[in-house]
Length: 306
View 1 (cartoon, rainbow, N blue to C red):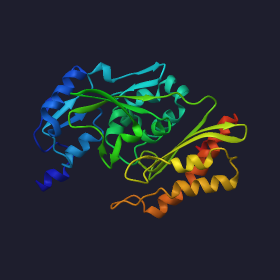
View 2: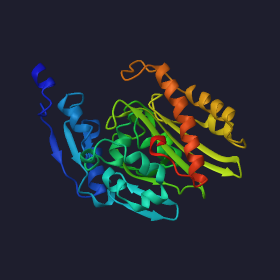
View 3: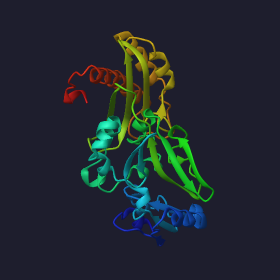
C-alpha cells in the first residue's frame, strides 16, 4: 500500500470507466453514481490525484467525446466556451485573443504546451484551486457558469461557483457545461499578471485587471485576485475606491493596499507566507493597472512589464 502511494506511474486501485457520447448520458451517469464518480476532461489534475491516492473514485466519466462541450462560439450575450475546450485551443483562438485578451494572456502562462494540449478550461475551474489562472480573468470579465444536471440547466455568476479550496457549487449530479463571458467594455484596457516558482508552475499569486477610463478618470475597473484567499476573488472594495479617480501614484498605492488587505491566510500555505502574498499582490496591482492604462493609451508595453 505504501509503495503504491509513492509510485505515481500507475493508478493503484480499481474503477469503472464510462465514455458518454452526450451531455444527457453524462448527466445520467452522474445521477446514478453521485459522489462515487469523477469527471475526466483533460486529466492533468484528476489523474495525478488518482495516482497519489488523494482521491479514489469508483467511476470515471470521460467527457472528451461530447461535442457539445467543446468549442468557442460568438453570440449576442458574449463568448461561449465549452467546458471541455482545451487550453491550447483557447491559446490559438484569434477570437479569444481579440475579444477576451485578458483570458488569452492568462492561458498562455498556464503550464507547458504539452499541458495546454491536454488541460481544459472546465477542468481548471472545477479543480477550484485558489490559484486557478483561468479563474481570475474570467471573474474580471463577469463570466457565468452554465451548469447542467438531472434537474435541468442553471446559470450562475462565476463568482458564486467557487465556495472553497477544491470545492464548487456543483451538486453530485451536475457538471459544468460551458463558460459564458460578456464582451469587454468598449476601449477597455486589460492586464493579467502572475508570480510563481517557475514559468510553468501554478501561480503563487495572480491578478487580472479590466480598466475603462473617461478621459483621465476611472469610469470602470474590475480586479480579480488569485492565490490569496480560499477561492479566487473579486476585490470590489478596490474597484469602488478607484471609480471616479485619476490614477495618480497615491491612488495606485492606496488601491494596492486595499487589494493586499484581502489576503486571507489559510491553515496550510506551502508556497509562500501571507506577508509575501500581500507584498506581491500590492506590486502586481500597481503594475497591472499601469499596464492596462498604457494599453488604453495605445502605448507599447515592454515584455518585462508583462
